Image 1 (tube, rainbow, N blue to C red):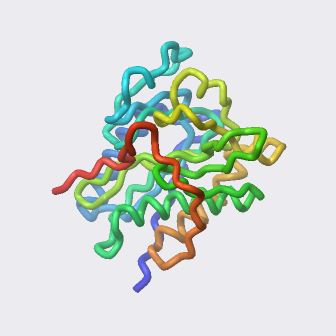
Image 2 (image 1 turned 120 degrees about the horizontal axis):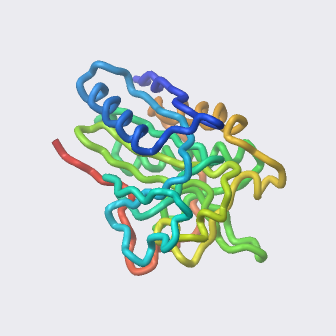
Length: 244
């Protein structure tokens, strides 16, 4: 039986980005309400001001030596360090995972939503086994590069944190640290790949539609993966799973 898609709330974008700590507190409140059954599954859509967030497996050398004034915040999700900032569309799905949906399937659905959104703008991306998120192949001029990141926490069967898709974010912020702990690949944006400005207002309705489809939990055709590229050293979990 099909399940209703979640409710979407645009919390703050453009000239009204949402402070990371304020958004984290909002996530906690919404999570508690979804767990209690007092609120439907909810996806928060927003932008943040420049902020680095360090997951539980971030190593000291991966952090920015000079953060450019952006805070570096320790967070309770899996994975390593990443950047949030203007021009990056963030989606926090706070949803109860159905019993038949494994956490890995949830991760792949979120990745597929980013992949399908990029495809709507003529940008071909896919998963890279061993590395989370949405990626572009190396093309002879540029290395393999990441356009969408993911980091999650699942507690009491309900998810928190989520995905971040680079629309027209300033990539200079990524020069200050090792994104997601991966030093042998690059980072890109939809604007750079399309060759014109592609901002959050243009991308938001597309990502929302794709998430609405995939989080209704119906079967879907997954985009074929690229070749495996394990993280240096060892694979790093992108999910913090907390059992009741």
